[in-house]
Length: 303
Picture: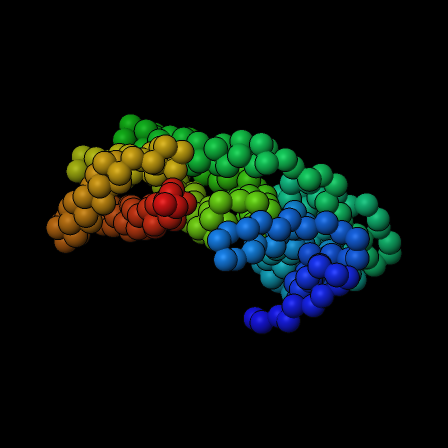
């Protein structure tokens, strides 16, 4: 966009700020902004956050729809949510869903409404700690799942599957913080994409565990080895995010191609009980592969 330069006093030149941008960041007369010189360009920035303040949600429809409304309002960055309901049981649903939202509590309640509000604002250090924990929970879930299936112990799979609930809770928090802190984070778009992909990987491991709970099945050794190597690619994704290594990245792509070829070559040889395992394994492999691009983009260094 173009702006005209105005003169104030004898030697001061001014340029007006776009009103939409100023409203978005809550800027008003007297506020301070940062101005930095970059050659022939000036960069203007503010430490303020683009955060929606309040949203109202009517608790009508299916439980899936209501839950998604609440979770998406939280992820988008709203600091207050006003719920309108007709039946007392809907208040119980609201409190159940709010239990998954870190830092949100009901602060006001009436006959047919309640208000929930964000009561904490985590620091950048807490964000980094939870992001690392998010990675580790996912890799541990993958390793535990492989161990149980390789030993033929399917009774413990339900406990492994339930780990996904903790992963989802951290996922909601991390995506909320990326939306609220995007101006201070490195490559927030790719970071959000990576966090989102990881949540889908957790869902795939969860569904695999739930499917085989208490089923007496012995998988062939080749499938189990592919499962172990697939989990190894998830471990590489974790390591490369925190300390990028191009050699590991090369290995990641080569190993992924080999695993796809091996799975395709054995697709027609599987027993009936192994077909669903093959399906989940292929799904997990594809989702882990989708971590590679955002991880690489985040670690690119500007010249």
